[in-house]
Image (cartoon, rainbow, N blue to C red; front, side, top):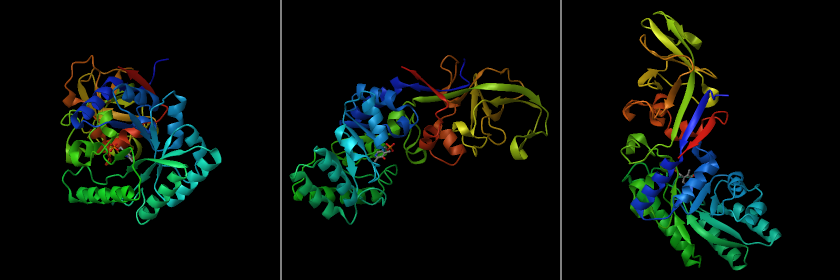
Length: 380
Ligand SMILES: *Cc1c(COP(=O)(O)O)cnc(C)c1O
């Protein structure tokens, strides 16, 4: 059966982006593959990233780390969003590195290590100003307890790390403040005798904007997928020399002529201004198309843009093809990107950034929200 919609993933683009970012910084890379590889597919992205030279993988959840191990990946993996109730024993037995943001986590992980009789590999996480993950007031106690547990053989502190809140705003003084806080937290850990293998702080934006924050390892997420960490502060993928890896296409379900003055879709939120041809696209908000996307987003059919008209429905949305369109039912409509065999200019295709701006969000949300029921097709 032909697919009614497809997410096309260019794995070659992911490899190129990683090679480019590593060459630019000269530092090793941890490829962030959480949330199903930002919607691009956990295992295919992880394998491509490692083949392009990334030496580490990073995920949020233990389940994600375990799926990587089950998929045959032996590279070091860090999981950094692990509630204290998680099954740390199985993580330790599978050599999954665990982030430690609090004394409570340290206790849970060391008790799992004790019952398993195996040393846990951990990365101490300090809150340097984002007020989300990591230890703040507990930091001194965390490093001294960690040192004691390390001496008793229950853990090995592999890394110390933190996360930026505003790395996309190059030169913002808050970044310096976080960097200074980070350096003193690392110094404090070293002063009690902790000597981590890897100190890591940079996400994609800091990897691109701020060489002073690179330390031993870059945690690269959005940029390996070829997307800009922040369109408004840092510009487009193209400007950053990144190649978007994801295209999305869906079939045109129906094409029909509609007279001027017709309401389109639920709530009649749009009315045709002139006689025109509308196309019904076989994807909707249950597939991850934002319901609130406005007419600055749409699809590319052949060479021509067709903007959204009316509200996006659960399984479908309507575009204005224009009166003279030769589009027909069954044609592909490109929601992101374009058909490589059409003669097109990349400027005319819709991007994750154009969908983000049409629905008041960020490209990260556009690519991660595409539902599992949309088939992924791998190329390159
Ligand atoms: C998601 C994440 C990253 C990657 O961020 P990007 O902005 O996508 O590069 C890095 N580190 C941590 C802790 C993260 O959660």
